[in-house]
Length: 480
Image 1: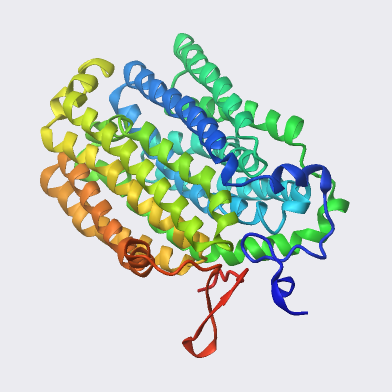
Image 2: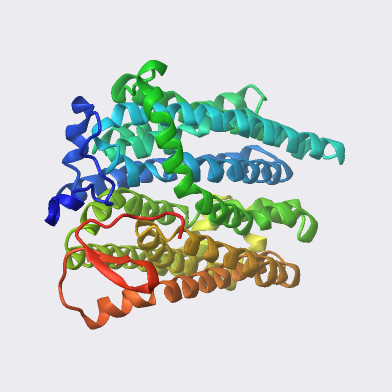
């Protein structure tokens, strides 16, 4: 066979021709394209506003209802949970918009069922890891931290449902369903926290469990009742090995990168009790929550855009770049506007929403550093998404290692020297280092985009000897 038929493939060059299909579920995936992207983004922004807003309110309630030391313990337990979450998302969830919108689009219910079992396996591992960490904390006579970590171990399987439900809805062009999950979560979590407070049962562990229940109830309902994945072992057995192989090829390098990212993001929570004390550590998450809404909005926009970017990658390079720069410009405009408002009104907002509890920590460098973080992160994330779609996972992992190196030197050094302000100054500095690394890795693409190039179909396909050949639908390697 010659011509385009020889390379007939999905959006990522992953061949679909001879695969058995699940046509009842295939149609919504097949229709996913950049034409539906605006509606998907609206739904994604809505659900992120609901989740981010609810978490913001929950943090305010915890700060008001719990002693400040327990708020610090809650931050420690949540940071510990985040390590298991990142590894789980890297292997199970993160590849879903890549493979679910392409290779397994014709078998989406079977693929979704395998992902559900993947969540259960990852949840069991998370419980073991977090329980072991809680025993370590107990062994060093830190009962408060041990109780918070045990709470994280119980809540982890429930909290895992959020990202799986989100991506399964996105890949089937049903982002509105996940927005409904956000509505239920917004009603349940404050209610659960109030009941715990009213009965005198509120603690770091019970707060984490309340978050898990509020997340799992609507998410499981959407997955099992509306998305209805294929869960019969006899039906999914034939695809399990193929899915595991694809996800492992994608996730083996990405898991290294995400572990590095977790260290970079949570080093301040883990080392902070030794460097600045639990009361100052308790201030980190509430202050960081000021930028969490815009951070989550950018993440949601990019996550919802991955299937459309993947679908255009093997088509016109011009269309791919046009969509890329549209996303970059939108994210930059959103974060810059948010950051300007934060610089102008940040101190007043913090004073009002946290009842003056953290006023003694506030300085102008903290506010400016907080405002810089979402802008730097947004540009880094846009460049990283492009590298992930191109299959350059090793390069992404390399940047994460750079992030950790910067955090453990510049970030922790700044924290030890300047105290709490040093946490945010160091954080912003490390974000700038990561953006520089992502720019370096993407410099060829950016140069072609800025200075223009002859429109052509497809992207360079590496051949032995370093030569390049243009193929209409090039295979993507996740081992580069």
